[in-house]
Image (cartoon, rainbow, N blue to C red; front, side, top):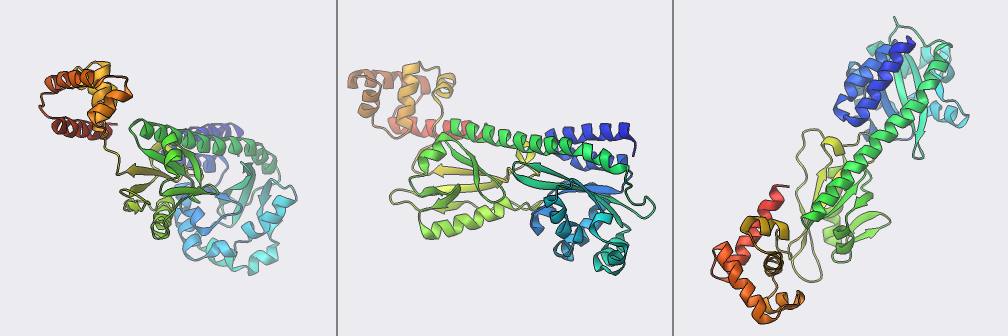
Length: 372
């Protein structure tokens, strides 16, 4: 291993935490800097599904495909025995610490899978982020040979960097998730961000307010109060939180309420900057109250029609379904003052009836949402 190349490769991992699309290239460079074929991240305690989305260098794609498809994760001695090494305080493990030469000679894992892909040698760097243990597995072929004793201190120096890289990626994704739910709040949508277990990790104020009417939060998880609706909701959340490249998002779920129209719940798999390969962010859940009309913000109404602040506030209230007298009262206006404002609004919006005004503002509200 060339230390200077390793430092440059670490810079690439930090960059990938910010730009997730660059993970394959960054890990390819890191593998080459360690004199290896490839490397990949994996949780020390994880499921088969974990392996389908975690970052890996492209040169070991065929190996990983067989590893998952053929069920080797259940008998992988590196993982099974690595837990014991972890408990003993080891932070860099190699094959010699996992299996003896005789065990390697008799092991189907080594003699079938690893022989097929010519990846007999391994090192694992163990590190911890937010109370969860991870490993970066580094794989070498027969020609490259096993990791030597002098390699271990160098790899141990990498562990703190990996902790910071994974932590940075997770926190940036969460920040993007919070930005998304805040933006949805500004256009009147309740929204949650959930992790791969469908646990809520962020929500906007509208989501917290709507949770008492049709939806509820139980131990950090979103549920519908109606049992049939909840069955559909949980299936939808399960689909949205399992990453399936190219798969369309699940259909919306309509959640029954005690009164009024149902809530429409859309679970959208996290994409782009919000897509967190380390599991903190999995999906954005958006709730639409079908009893609430789409209305534009007061500023949008003012800019569109040249209304005064008072006129825009009154028009917005009417678009929400309020009667003129009630809308006027809410702003401290007499009925006659509200009627005078309404006449001015009619003139500026080129409509002649209140129903036409409401229809116009609802269309404007939908357009404003689409443009966000």
